[in-house]
Length: 325
Image 1 (tube, rainbow, N blue to C red):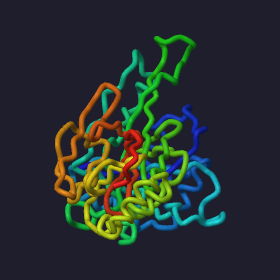
Image 2: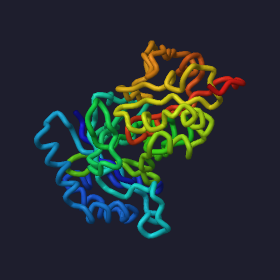
Image 3: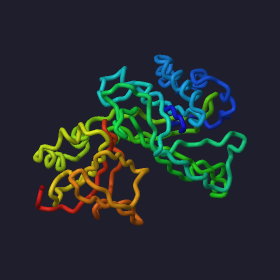
Image 4: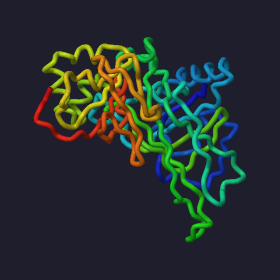
């Protein structure tokens, strides 16, 4: 199991500072070398116990690997502006460890690495489970309460170039991290080391998860939400542990809304595989893989990994029908 620590840092993080400069520093000291990470530094200073808990976990779990901290760029903190309930400011949300859903990142691409003297960064890819202990924001998975989860996906592009032509470009790896209400943040700048792992700058805050029905209400799923309420299934979907909702953008021609809901199973985008699954209604839900992505019951999945308090929601673009259950 790989332990990862998430917080945020700025897009203008200088690539000129070698990772070796901070490699033997504590997390607080390493953050202190970067003025642009003062917001993240304040989050650490406000709750030193959270960092210590993560380090203790790593010490007692040798297979957990290095800590990774995703540090927020300097921007107005949710505490210093009109507070929005969806802003996540609890540092424990950003301290995570890998789960069975995590997977190794793809190998670096490109013809030359201009950071050869630095240790190669290992990006955490897949599902990360945090130490956020507030039951209000638990992901309930595998029939037990677990820390709130986020999903990370890695993209690559040739954007770091020493000269203006391709042979001298280094691939830029960028993590996109999904949290509640479909909120997505991304890493920016160049990661740098501290004593127990890597610090990854991120461009914004995580979003706290909400119930499946509230997530539908706030993310464009009103059509499906209306059908759920018409059948009286909202409470069951929100309160059942480990739920995956495949939400249609248009009314479905089906017997029940539960035809596209899975109970006792949380399937993130990193877990998508072609196959047949038993829906909560007893019907068969079919996932297929095509050249342009994954499909559910013949309709393309167009938005993934809207993390909810008890699982995850994905949207698929079905053809409009006249029947709304």
